[in-house]
Length: 41
Image (cartoon, rainbow, N blue to C red):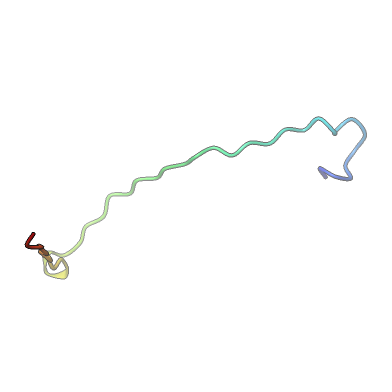
């Protein structure tokens, strides 16, 4: 519709807005494996 829509629709403006969604989840403790890395300087 934007390129070949009804007459008078040439001034259509569009925009993109950032969207952030947060969902609480439960992860079993046994599925989390901590990894510690270090570097000697």
